[in-house]
Amino acid sequence: MEFVPRSLKEIIETEGILSEERTQGIICHLVSALHYLHKKNILHRDLKPPNILLDNNDVAKLCDFGLARFMLTGTQVLTQASLKGTPLYMAPEVINSPVIPPIYNHNADLWSLGCIAYHLLCGKPPFDTKCLMHLVQMMKDQPIIWPNTVSAVCQNFLEQLLQKNPLQRLTWPGLLEHEFLKNKVYIMDMEQNEEVDILTEFDDIVSPLKSMKINEEAEDEEDEEEDEEENEEEEEDEEEEEDKEHSACSTSHDFTSIEETTEEDLRSSQSGWCSETCQELDVDCDKTNSSTNDTKSNDFMSEEWIVFLKQSASEVVSGNITSMTQKSFILVILSPLKSGTMPSKLLHYVVTVLAIPFVTPNVQQTEKDLITQIYIETKVIPCLMQAFSNAFKSTARNCVSPVPPDNIGIQELDSLGSVLLLVEGLCLDKPIECLKQFTESIYFLKILPLLQKCLSLSHGNTNLVTNTLAVLILTLLYLPCNISLVQDIVIGKHLEGRISNVELHKLLRNNEDPSIRERTCVLLLHMTRLNPNCLSEIWHQTLTNDIEFLKNDPCPNVVQAAIYTSE
Image (cartoon, rainbow, N blue to C red):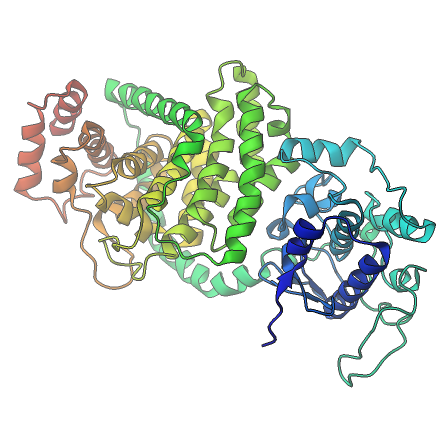
């Protein structure tokens, strides 16, 4: 592996604006690299100065292919899972897509190339802001200010690359014929390593966006292939349980006032957390008790996103929620969640921005309802659960062990708790739609063991436990057909390997947070009302004694829950 001493970002920071001649050389090297990638139907998707390395002769080398994606021949269109990259260099068709999910092709990389050229010549990106909301609006409405210090050929090159409409953007093979690059880009034949005729190279791979041909296999293709066999096995298991679930769903249950008390308690805790999170935005995210070993590249990209998310959070707190009602903006907010190695600090900020509209005083209920509906349509809950799964699996070595590993840090646990709390809050507002997405995510992502882990954290991180209990209770209240899912979590069924059930005794006797004792009682209450025999395999006299003991608990809510449960 070749050692390259510096990145383009470092050069920009130390030298500022570069000359047109020097910029031209760097851009030619990047065009050569992009030609090679796009000829192979690969998008880089994160073209930016930190990912461009330069040797001592100013030869640019493109690196960091962590977000690169393969395009199927004949489609050249990427969708939903492909919303990747760094905001300042994202193409308009990605950020302000007229369709959901966004559709784009290799032209998105060429926009990023234009942004880099503009940055080198002007000292800043075409749209220079630290607020994601402003960036979205600027890309939509604000014209680009072209530099007056470059040649007419160079300015024309920038203007053609930075066309907001991808159909009008300079692309292959015309890009190589532009006067700014003509006869200056070295193109290699990928099979014979010989120079080739670039005019015919892209005839077979350039697919105009106006055709809007979408191959459904392009959506999360790698994930679907990975999970296909496992999903078939799940379907067989679900069919076996179908009759049991149907009988449970067809039973009418007359819940007493404990249901109202529970929902009111859940709403109160959800609002309290969000308010506290907004007030302590900067403090909470600077904790260092984390064992996540991210690479420097991921750290830098995370910091870039955090800058945007912090500014966006401030905008929402001040009452500017217009962007939160736009699907394209929410998809941009969610895009960092697609990373399998996203730091918990970044996850915290994403969750905070999504939660703020629901606790901002001047936001009307109609606006909150609209935002919740937007969250449903953009699949916020599945994205959050994917991030939840990734965060847990990145630190957990044994996914079937009921005891969490010691290397899960405080910040990771806090972030996991915040994810479940936001899910809880959304499920309170639109329970049926949100809980369906929640339960489907559990099956699809196979994270049932992780939820069982959450319930095993009865000491040291009470928020994660209480939030897990709350979502399970809401599932029983509004989607009683999923009693088998909750039952599997509590008693440890359908898990690979031998595993003990959740230790209900420790939850009932938890002395750190009365909410854990109360919600455990309520969970048991609704489980047994839906299926009186569901806990027969694990019930023992100790649990009966625990519930009787709670009738004398100092917390009135715990006493009430224990009384209803014992009855």
